[in-house]
Length: 168
Image (cartoon, rainbow, N blue to C red; front, side):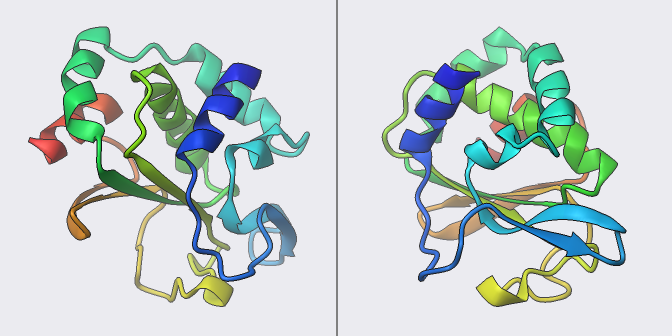
């Protein structure tokens, strides 16, 4: 896990404009503490979140053949992940997606942006307004600055195969 976090930090690029990273707030609608705003993979090492994160990350085995096909396509891609730490789907799919990224060959040109939203699916301080995502997690894929597509809530096939299909 430590190697994974170090490797992922190389991929992290944030234009947070001075916003606090890995901010934990109490969300009254969710009735729990949540991550809110821009986050790094280190945020999920907090005791509040590490149980579900580690369980899904460690337990997921991505399809190696699909990863081989993803490697040449992922360079220059930006992936914005919008998730809610209060959400069961996010707790399952986000760690699995991070496992996929951790098993790809080192990629200098991948930009990863992790945004955690409240129960209203907003992060107003960083410009995520109501309606930007209707379901979490949402994995939003950009190629050359243009949105190529989204994996919304749960994959249609698997996360790695859905990502491959978006990039073809």
